[in-house]
Image (cartoon, protein in one colour):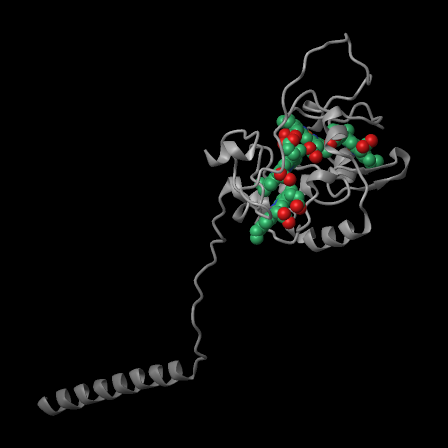
Length: 223
Ligand code: HEC
Ligand code: HEC
Ligand code: HEC
Ligand code: HEC
């Protein structure tokens, strides 16, 4: 009886040894791999990510700039706005009166370009995600005033405020609705005074800081 018992234990131990050994033998033969951490994407600061929205076109803007020196000025830019920050009116006919916007506007305004029938470069929309364009932009019915006025109008932010010659000018306007810098500042549709000479320096706000108070001359800044 005792002998049978020992033979049983011996057989069990042998089987277990073979089992464990073969498991580890086959495990050795598997290819090694390192489990990669799942990518979660880069956390972006919502108010700052717009800065890069059109940076993929930066080099194209650079060549466009060399090809084209003309274009509208800040004065004509403001002719089409009731005041600084107001939505500009639509200065051209709309093909389909029933459209609210979206693709029928974005086909031209998403990336801009020359339109022969309007004899102008299309301003690039800084907010292509707001698809109901005509909620805010109304067609221009007349270029005249309803009633003549001698009011002076609202002041517009002044440009060329830099701390020293050759320094980066401050951003004279708010950032809200102005996140997408290159849409307004680059390419042939940008007003000539503010058409940026360095569209390829993508991180605009690295060098250009916000102006917290409207400066009229550099003396204000030093005081
Ligand atoms: C065929 C191309 C084309 C289509 C389609 C088009 N636009 Fe335009 N848009 C232009 C061009 C070109 C200009 C510049 C006109 C000028 O400077 O005289 C312009 C100017 C504008 C402006 C004035 C921008 C400024 O900075 O003063 C607004 C606003 C505008 N369009 C809105 C719209 C809306 C809204 C739609 C859709 C209902 C639309 N556009 C469809 C080509 C187009
Ligand atoms: C919620 C209101 C609103 C909607 C919707 C909207 N816009 Fe605007 N848009 C504005 C305002 C306000 C400005 C003026 C921004 C400024 O100068 O501060 C503007 C400016 C513009 C400009 C001129 C950019 C420049 O150079 O100053 C164009 C072009 C334009 N919008 C086209 C469009 C198109 C095309 C759509 C539809 C895809 C659209 N907008 C939807 C409010 C809106
Ligand atoms: C909706 C169009 C628009 C957008 C978007 C926009 N700007 Fe401007 N920017 C202007 C206009 C117009 C001026 C001229 C002053 C004025 O009228 O506000 C200007 C002026 C400036 C100036 C002063 C230039 C000088 O010569 O003194 C700087 C710097 C500037 N912007 C930087 C930026 C940066 C950085 C961004 C992105 C965070 C930006 N802008 C987005 C329209 C825009
Ligand atoms: C590395 C720093 C730096 C970065 C990044 C930068 N700028 Fe500038 N920017 C400057 C300096 C410096 C000047 C003054 C240029 C001069 O006087 O030669 C300037 C001038 C300007 C002007 C006045 C017109 C001109 O070109 O002289 C505008 C508008 C402007 N920058 C917009 C922008 C925009 C939009 C971006 C992002 C695409 C940007 N900047 C990125 C340093 C920078």
